[in-house]
Image 1 (cartoon, rainbow over the protein chains, first blue to last red):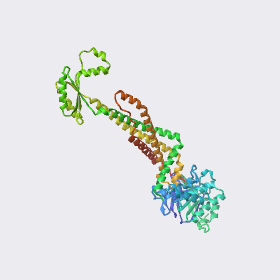
Image 2 (tube, each protein chain N blue to C red):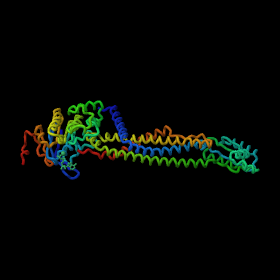
Image 3 (cartoon, chains in turn purple, orange):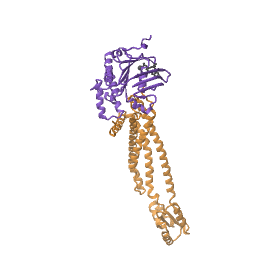
Length: 231
Length: 308
Ligand SMILES: Nc1ncnc2c1ncn2[C@@H]1O[C@H](COP(=O)(O)OP(=O)(O)O)[C@@H](O)[C@H]1O
Ligand SMILES: [Mg+2]
């Protein structure tokens, strides 16, 4: 579902954020992307969401290589991927309903269907009944869940999240992470970048570790490979 | 998933959103509309001026008469005889004999010099024939032929064609008409610039919203749509203001113009913008606004790409 083949990304300022990164996430799997701050986690997610293009190598998402996709096809591509941001990127002057509905609105979905699906998405993240509130009238955890509802409303095949629990206390973090697990359980491919090792261990999912722009190890937490014991 | 109903609903929504946003910043909106309104009122006013000048002179601009002045001392019988000959000439519609006595009496009556003229014993005015050419024989060449024919009569002192001023007047109107075209083009570019700048500012103000919209898969066309409606709305409201200005000015001037026309024995009344002008201005204004917004959107929206 997501495949990186010897991918490198150099930013315009000359900084090579990642290089030689290869991994594969099969359909329906949930994977954690971990590593210190600056290791390149956000860069990997930006390459998946086509917010950036690879400098070298091939990024394939949902069967399509992002490097060759023409600009006019990017909007349609993005509609197939749900993205959750650490700062949630909500429109603070629009009610919850409008924020969650936005991905459907840009896809010209009929109004009646929008109404139905916004309610369903808010129900899935436990926010039913808060449609008319403004984002800033919600708690930080609730705001994050609005961001998740917006990411999943198009029923994307791929759901990616960049440190979605970074601003949350452990209890809320666990709650949000459980929401992601529920989407994986119904068939969505999920990739979550986080540096919350405690949570990662608790969930027992596969983990891809980035270290200074390289994959240190792509392993199942239960089956450590030889690379994992290197000094 | 998408049908024509949805498409319509989307556009309606974008149009409503555009008007809502204009209403939320009334002062800036009014300023923009005022500038557009003035820019559109000017060419419309000029056009009305030209149209009215044409209509005012139209009655006699096409009827070019010849006046035949006879030598002093030509007997009136001879003049009447020649008038008959003129009548039988092809290309002549009517002939009117104005004897010197009648001319003097009229002049005495209307000029206000009555008393002074009493001192004159001999009538200084000649007999005159007024010739109206037949319709179809009033081309410049035909008229010149007619003029030469009458001038060849030995009793004739002078043949005058009242055509020069018509030519001159039409030339002036033509110059005005071209000035109008130039002004219209220049002011249209002005409207494009004003709308473009307003839309540019609005794009900057809504940067965050545009970014997020693109982030969730909004196409450039989708992001552009509300700005196009905003631009068209600016143009339309500006055109309505221009119409109000011009209709107001016409109403203010109409009584004075009617008085003036009456003083010249004309029943001419000032014409306001017609239905065609009105529709064209409204459509043109909206189109200019749309194009201005399109230009600004094309330049500034592409640059806004979402950052994660
Ligand atoms: N837009 C950018 N321009 C230049 N350098 C960047 C940009 N984004 C990230 N970087 C650099 O790339 C490296 C990896 O960053 P990032 O992918 O954000 O790591 P992480 O999310 O793991 O903290 C960092 O050194 C960062 O400074
Ligand atoms: Mg990051």
